[in-house]
Image (cartoon, rainbow, N blue to C red; front, side):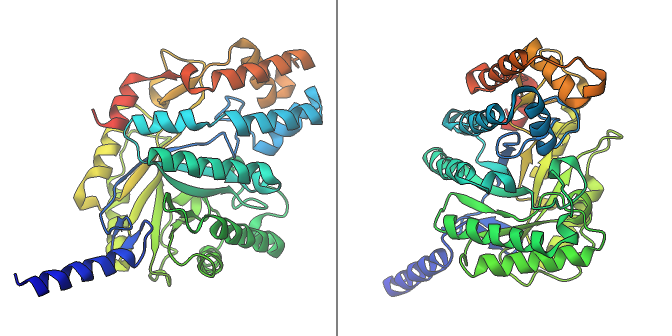
Length: 394
């Protein structure tokens, strides 16, 4: 090939690569700033900037309920200090280092909008971006709990009126995303914006229109980062997307769980692949897990098959309180157990169902909260080796 042609080809490649320096959609694939296809293997950092009782083995309680019940035991000031300690210590750079050491290349970060009410949550996100840049782990920001709550499920920490019934809550959600995009628009380690976790409006068109509104707000300050949208009704119903997104840099995110049988997700993937091709939009799995070793292994294999067109997956979660280590229930396998001890378990039982469990004393509750923080540190986690091997593919 003549030298002039080689130079022109090189310049063309450079122009294409520089068109968007961030992870972005290119047809049905996700590529990095150089145009290289990326497959994401991620983990969910739930229990940090968004809490729920399941992660702490405290029943089906929202973050707000957990905070209120703790306040009745130890007072508002002690709970405020505990909340700040969780922000500071539940996820640290050591966690990100350990995640990178497993060969994982992305963390999905659930956010409760309340974490952004003051400076604490913002400071932690800033630090997280720095840690992830050092260890080359991409970050997906996930609005797990929008103002009012995007569904009635406890993990969304719902309030009254909910997101869909109150324009003020919708306005606040849009503004939060604008602020997040303005703050992190220059971060190449940011993989994308997951606009709403497992939304559940009664009418699907409400969700599509709201996604468009948030996207427009983000694009006014950030033209480059990937927008991630989930299906309705626990990220499972994609029939709401009757047309391709108006924005060209969007991915569809689906969640895969099976709480009633051992069937894997071939049918779901087949339908989603058709939609992906029809709309020319990438697919990514935003959550899966909580099943048997065999099911988890098969699901990872399905996500990795080229014909299914999935650009990555996120295992749920990185760590959670579990009393059953080292012999976990086969049906609810996990990666890392936090084992805070009997004081915490008694406190967690009371937080779950106060009417049926003894109420801890303030001192017992304080000691339990301290034990929880200590047990959640990476060096104290208890790993299930079989699940680790499945996740890292060895």
